[in-house]
Image (cartoon, rainbow, N blue to C red):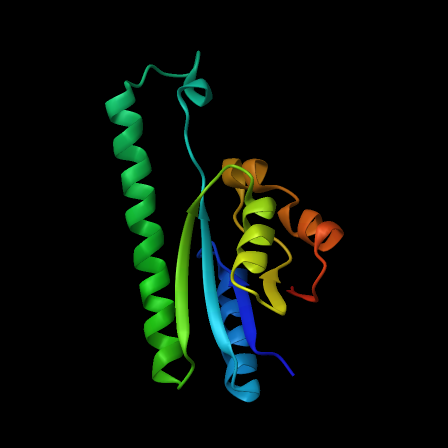
Amino acid sequence: MFKKILVATDGSTLSRKAVKCAIGLARTHQAQLLVVNVVPRYPLSYFEGAASFSADEIGAIERRLSHEAQSLLDGIAERANAEGVKTSTVAISSDLVAQALLLAAKKHKCDLMVMASHGRKGIKRLLLGSETQHVLTHSTLPVLVLR
């Protein structure tokens, strides 16, 4: 039924559950798996008044986040491949998480999206907020949401 499944992950406990489910679905349907992590960008304006970071320091933060995202994705791909699921990964740098996920699904011709109902807490929750709701509202393909 499904040929290419996109799973969104941020490394949170609930997104790990979504990844596990997506791997199982991909294995069952002999589908390819696309694992996506959206890395928030941190422009200078985020730090105005809070702290003074130079462009080099912000660049270092972005590189660290990108490295962490790739490490997360590599671990998931290794696990999925070990279960016989052909897997590719994409780390996207964007503050518009839901839009980035929708564009990735379209670009990679996915026919199902799997994601958690919510992800991280605290400031990251404020930044990422209702991304799942946005995806559900704007997606033209089926979305499986795990709680």
